[in-house]
Amino acid sequence: MIINSLCRAQQTLYRREGTALPEKIEGKPTPDDSRDGWLTFYGLSPRRTAALLESAKRFALVMNQFQIAGKDQLLAVSHDEKKKLHKFAYSLIASASPSDSVRQAFVSAGLCGNALPQEDFEAEMIIAGTELALKNTHPIVIMRTMTAFLGFSVFDLVEKWLIENFNSDKNEDEELIIPGDLPDIVPGKNTSPGSISQAVRLAGPQLMAATLAGCPGQTIEYIKSLAYTPVGQILIDWDIRNARSKFSSEELTDAQNAFIELLTSFRSEPNPDMGSEAEEWLMDVDEGLVSDISNLILELDEHVLKSVVSAMNPKLAASLIQAMEPIAHDRLFSSIATSKSKKILDALENSVPLSNNELTRRAQIFAQKILSEIAPRNKTLGKSLPLPAKLRQLLTSILSRE
Amino acid sequence: MILWNAELTKRLACSDKEKAALPAIVQELLAISDKTRNEGILPLASADQSKIDQSPMLHYGFRLIAEGLSTEALEGILAIYLTTSAYNGFEFLKQCMYVEALLSIAAGDSRELLLRKLVPYCGAEKAYSLLKALDAENSPKAL
Image (tube, chains in turn brown, purple):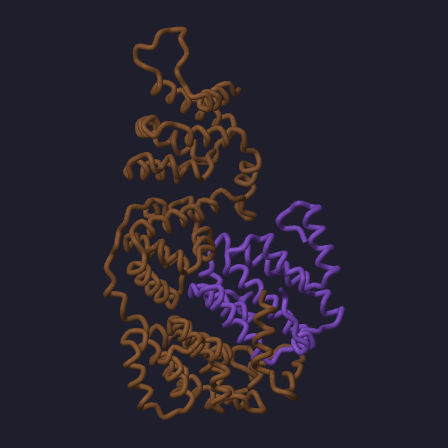
């Protein structure tokens, strides 16, 4: 909850004895009070705001150089630095001090801890930046955090500056393509911008970077265009580069599969605004049939599944997918060639929700195809097929439906 | 564990009359979260959202979410905006609810989980009746 973070921030910024709380503001702020309608406690003049913004920019640029060139670069900058706050921060970062002791170090050095919070404004900004730098945070996040002290009035300026100063590495990226199904799934009719965007947020930056690290450029650009602003795109590119150097191909494939599972889970969840027809269909769908089809896919011998699905009309496979759990989707797609998967996904894009009767009929056609595949060509009439009990039960359950 | 700070509590205090307006804010935020689930974050991060433009916190908050920051970084940044703001009372409480919703949306929470994170801001009694109404009607849009 944000309350805990607020308690910590409140404790830190207004910790001094006798510090007055911000005065109560009646009514809505007027445009004269603040250009963006957001009032800050510090009430900084435009000139002071501009000076503090320059201070944050300088700090973020030095952190960027430090992350690229290392400690020696930082020590060289520190040597020439005139401002005490910056110089001290650089020395703490160069010596890899623990991030949770930064504030105390600034207080001990007499650079923070004045009676009025206004007097420590720049120190608070630099402390926040130093703590993040010691955690190896990207300079964009450092900049966003430091300039949060200045309110929203500089938000757009900061965005423009970040794009100008951190967008230079993109052309150096080399594509790394590993086996995975994500490029076949997105873009697609069943992966709406909303579900992709939500899956991206739920996955978080690290999993997302590992997921995209093994995808073709086209897939990366598509997902970026749906879920990230230009600044976000710079950040995820940086995370992708890190993931490519940090993880093995197997780990990147695992990440991609985990993301696909997230994405498909959204596709199977009812959506409050998806329309009454789709909602009714979701409510009416026969859960027993879904369970039987899914279990059948999971129980089948890989060779049989591959043979049946490969020979199957993509439209029939697409209609079965409507009544299948995500784990069964994965098995089905993993058993067939990518070209066949693509045809099924294309058919799925053009399919409409089917009634339970239609789904049952298609499931029964699927069951019959399985039996044909399993049955030996010289099978004697009247003799039962040698099927595992579980498989027999599932096929019987599907074929006996009316 | 929920931390407690006397000055923050004082800063969050507002009248019963003001508290009566909080369920409407919860409803507004649930509607916004539905929109993000259908359309994604980027449309809300654009400048043309007149409803959201009324609140700088929501407008810029969605832009921060679309920068793909980690939940920890986003929470840290939004906490700074809130703490250094000059707001008090009802307006401050409202901004806290906005931030709670932004963090929940950023984390990809479901509608139900977002609701459960927001209703405590309405006070224990009101929160209970809101959740009870939701369960009774068994509708995702009930309040």
